[in-house]
Length: 219
Image (cartoon, rainbow, N blue to C red; front, side):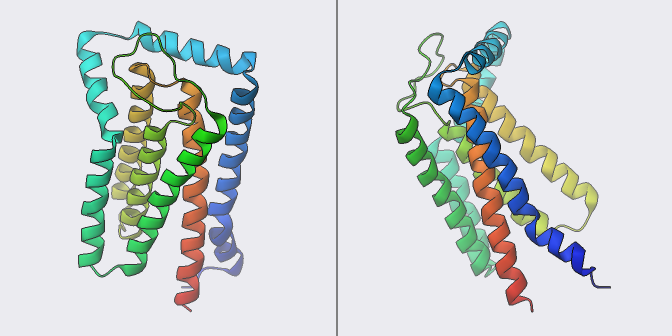
């Protein structure tokens, strides 16, 4: 049974609608970061104070481990494994999609960091980090990498339970990596929130274009 025309149209343009919401969210955060508004400073301070109150030796060890999941080597390593699997399965379009999405996210993060040039927080660091602060590179990389992996796996899953577990696990991992960057003291909360908004917008646009291309091929 074929989907109704209005349903197909809605599904076709839904990713772009979600991307617009992410973009609006990023614009709101970025504008406050740029003008160093009182609201964003209050938000950052409250969340960072909350994170500091949670600090224990055990949790610090765990958070240091989690934050490394967004480091270059794990991200590149997971990416290479994914590329090999896609190549072996002869999913050429998915392979190209994976490369473009992750490469585009890294490029976008570099551009945004240079544009805003926000200094990182200096007090209470548990790990060292270099470069500008906004938006968080680890958070953008995690959102994009695990987001695109979840989407590609989602496409080949039919059971709703499996899809729910996949979505929940991916979301939890991305949120934990983002929070770990705040906990270890190398990012402001608004850096992480901005990263989620930017990578969310980019990922949704990429998924939307990918689906449009697949729809044309499937005709």
